[in-house]
Image 1 (cartoon, rainbow, N blue to C red):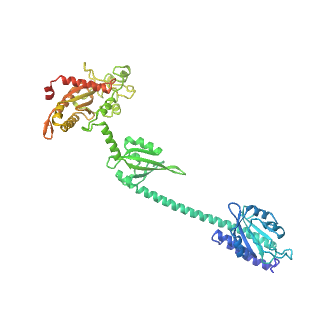
Image 2: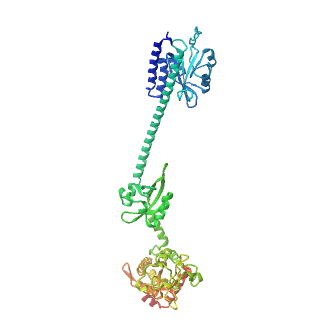
Image 3: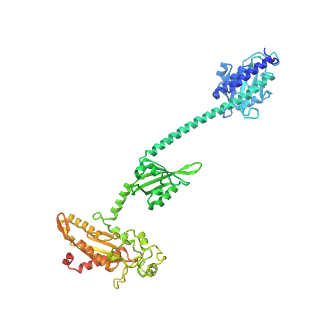
Length: 570
């Protein structure tokens, strides 16, 4: 029998202990390490049975490895003992340093608790240091390597080969082995956690690569335009990436697109809309410039892509071509405001254009006098008028009836100062027809065709429609680009011409009448119509209906003043 008094036995045991401790660090996994710990007890410390009880996350201890007995392994492996029962064990018996020895005389109270255990029966000890089959010896393992750390697990041993309770050397060897086993198990757990983290990281990277590839394909092959723009820094708004659809839409290559930002491409009138959309995200409809200099209507849907560390970094923009929809909308708007036969503005559009030039302050009122000079014009007339009246009545005029006052040629005393247009409205005043004071105003020429009804009745509506179309063309050709020719209905037309004096308006009526008189050929047949014109003048304080009624009344006065033959011959 080996005894601790034999130095060579201690040396052999030390060599065996050194070997098994070295084996602890060669295991490839946590499970292998736990089994190596249990096997080392048998191979290096001279016990016939060992078990490693490992603390679970919930605090209870599970039998993680068993060595020395297949029957004990089958009975105990994987079973769980509560933390309370284990703390009871570690508080009982004799304290051999960090070891806990519970002799059979005390351990009988533990026979019925929930800790898995394996014991064999045997005779009572003959010697004081003889091992009894019901003796229990535990070696706690702590994370910090000593009892001050967190409990990592417990090694339980049984049946020493020499049949004796371990002496001082055996106790020291077991305690040192438990210390090394705790380090090996902690390292194995760390390696396992690192491996799991690496696997998880690899999976996340694979998922990220898959997501990036999916985004790339969705971005590149999207049927509508897509763009990524920089946000912040010196390159704010610069296009970082564009797909093929957007390049085709704007007629530029991807490398060319990277030289621009959307603000470089947007129509000047839509810059404000773009800036609001870029700052807030959301959706907007605006025009982007093509390489050929034309513009295309698009719908922009912006999403701000935020970086968790640095805040907003990129603007993801979806660009949809809505040119056809816009064209259709414009066509619908044109149909709503224009005559379907002649293409001229219709009655509603005429009244809207005329009404935009009128206000409810009549000429001669105190507020009106404060807003206009004696010639009815304001400083910056063309700019203000263009903004208030979008059809260009302040456009360039012909040499026959160019205005001489109220424009840039008018003396300063006849023009309002900066305070004149306090309500941003260019007041319209009519010239004095009795004194011909030289004021240039908005002339309203009401035209009614003479002899049209007989043509319509004799040759049919088809011929009548052709006559109306030709008359509309001749009237449009006889006025300036900024003037309005509208079809009021039937054979009635109205011309709005701004910046005319009394003589200018009369001359315009004569020229338009002479343009209408020449024969009109329809399907090989020549027909003729005449025209009667009544000249009215728009002025603030009047409604559009009142202005048209005045011109209509003067047209009938002019029509009655001439004989029927005269009306056809003129």
